[in-house]
Image (cartoon, rainbow, N blue to C red; front, top):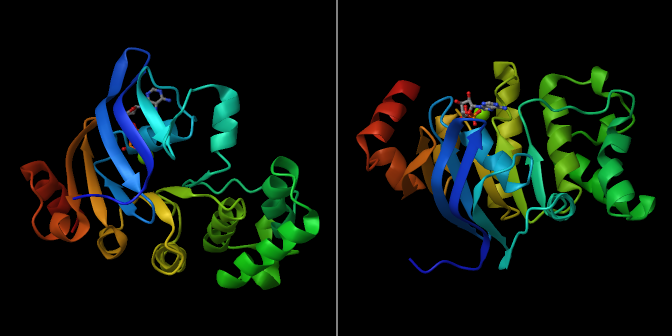
Length: 247
Ligand code: ADP
Ligand code: MG
């Protein structure tokens, strides 16, 4: 299939931690507006892979191309790239001594040198979208886990990224908090047409949003399959077994 404009391409990526080789010949691209679910068993290398995409992990071989330009992996380039590639993790690590609003404004004002007024207008609009505007002057400790995770998503979006990476953002939440966070990501995918790579153990959610699934096992991409097809008829026995284990 001929794809639209590619935002990110990964070619022949190899990654080891000391002697442990954890990613093997990783190749994939993601097109503008596409949602890719990165699925696979625990320890298969999902977090390592997405951390390589914004320079949080070094890799030994391979190339990354972002918006048509090959990324030279220097710290300076990663810092620039991290303003275009937002990431949200399992732990939300908001600064406890800053209000919700100041947590969100830190990147846009300090890093991107937006005016506080401009950044605040964007932040408040995003807070409205996630239903948390009334908490802008609260501190993180006054929020539930689900609310903190929604703020962490807003904080990443406030930089106006071109690509979002989500790594098991609901894994440490109480069950009743999960839906609210997943709904925000779903809206981002469907209404805002955000390009994103999503690592999740929530299979119904993945099924709902994934245009394509990358199935990773032992550091190798075993299949790249359109979302609908992956969940109905995965191509590999390993993926089939994985899906059965997730039921
Ligand atoms: P997943 O996110 O799919 O659970 P990870 O990317 O966290 O997988 O881990 C892939 C492999 O790399 C695992 O074998 C894990 O033990 C190993 N690993 C992850 N982080 C480190 C690290 N900082 N140092 C050494 N080994 C690591
Ligand atoms: Mg992980």
